[in-house]
Image 1: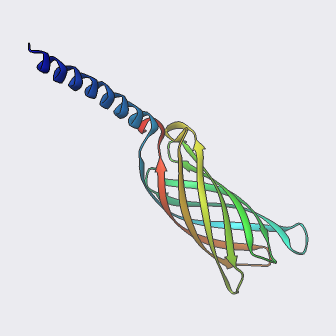
Image 2 (image 1 turned 180 degrees about the vertical axis):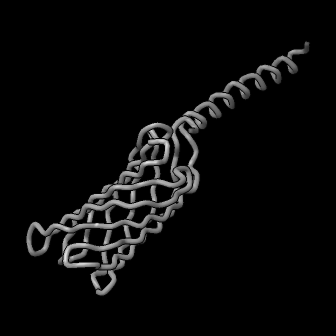
Image 3 (image 1 turned 180 degrees about the horizontal axis):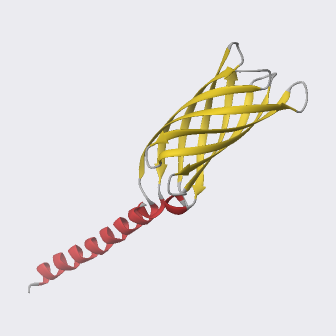
Length: 165
């Protein structure tokens, strides 16, 4: 083989090795895919002070990559400025869990409160172990009593499943 053909062959081999490394890294790090969900939950609030409250809730919904799921949630909120933090735990039918932490802002007008949250996927169990991503959460809260409500969530974002799960 001529010297120029050897150089081209060596360059092609090096390019293939580099490409294989890039593809292996992309496969190991996962790929961002759309995540969409709806969730209906019942919640109970506890007021720690005239302005601060916590909420515990349970519900059910449907999501891409989860299918039908149940959820538990916890929120801490402020009645003065409408800020809140929240934690969600989604459980798929097979028991795999997905965890989301969020921050949000509520429009405290009544009778229905509208809330926008930005959620960060923080992992999970089973096929969601090591998952990451971000989602926007839009909620409408309808009061059913002095400390109870129902809330409807619409979620849209991306999820990265570790190792291409």
